[in-house]
Length: 57
Image 1 (cartoon, rainbow, N blue to C red):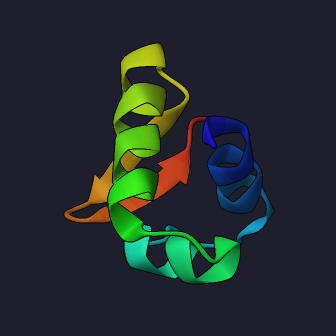
Image 2: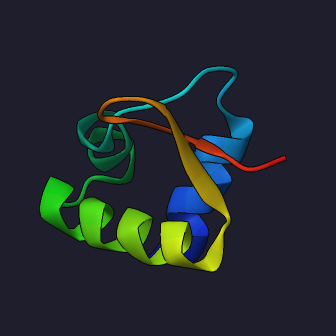
């Protein structure tokens, strides 16, 4: 799941909300939020503004 979330964030040209990612993947937004939390701990994702996420470049 984390790989898929990171892939979508990388392809997007702007920060995305967990709900937008969930719609694209066809999964529950809670699962996406858990994956984002894990990616943040690993330093692969950042939050440029509240509730929006983007990959660390």
